[in-house]
Image (cartoon, rainbow over all chains, first blue to last red; front, side):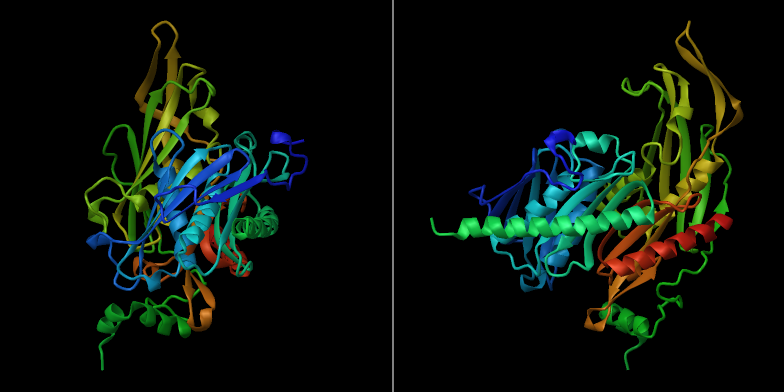
Length: 220
Length: 274
């Protein structure tokens, strides 16, 4: 038995997603793993500051806001990782000399906020109608002190974890890791095991995206 | 006929593609192969009496200096016997034209955070050994990692300097006095070496997309190369146990990632000998 009443090591918490949750943004979404929830907004293509202007593509402006307290190096790294992921997904070259602004607000944190942020950002870009090559799905995994691989760990499980791995895969090619960030101490075999489980979990999330979109588009 | 320097400025992507298509890099190195680094570790004179300094030069281009400063602090009430190890990476304007004398930007903070994630917890050092008196006083080790020359591949160079400095650090014997509530130590008598459990070596690979979309990895990219890469991958390997201590990356095929991990392990073994 895991925390939050889950029975299986490879079980995700209940997923939640909604589109168009903010009225002023061009696109917005909310994504959650259980009580970990993230709000994402997208403005753009919009005017860009001259010093950030790129003549052949749009400039991505990413900001990650914490649930409470000041934002720090943790959030700058999250922004850099999100930029790497979104730059590869968005067709920025069709909007030269403009900016696409993605803002992430954490609204509940029980572990894995980075994965929720990637998923929310991908859905908000979809909601804003920004052209993308693929959608991104991200999950976090952790090895507990006994070496058991836990999918989508809660904060409590993360506290005692030996290593933590965040994987992102796209829906166009799952032979390519769209993004990875691992910390802790682990062996190459453990890394590979985590990668395989993440690949499958990301496929589950992709089908969840599809179901949510179908529900949104279905005639009332 | 355009001269090569002009061509490189006008079409950096194409410039690198032509080299890599033939399996070599503009500076004469080969793709995924890692040649042994031209690594020199220098211990400069002690500048501050609390500081032990070590200088690491990686590849003859990056120059990094790491100072370890020890201070006494009150431990966290939840963990009364663990000390602190606080790394911080700084890119002052002296190290490259892209760095301005303003508050640290996204790049600086994210490199700092990556180094912190590798060294945090009990990964490198048993933090219990930094305890002077449970619940009263512990050592705080501030590791200031400062770049003097920056030419790409920040994380590897920063980790190298950090590890070298940590291995070199000697603390004085400290005694806590219950009556006065103070810590006394003889600054001249530095006899306690740190018990460094793991030696993290970073190996960064640039991911370059060739014609037709095939991806290749090149070890230890320079900042010139970083500008034309689609992404990069950093693998941190413990030189002692060959276990992994961190992987950060994007846009990398699974099999290429395995190759990168293999190469990183080889590199960790090679550097350990130096």
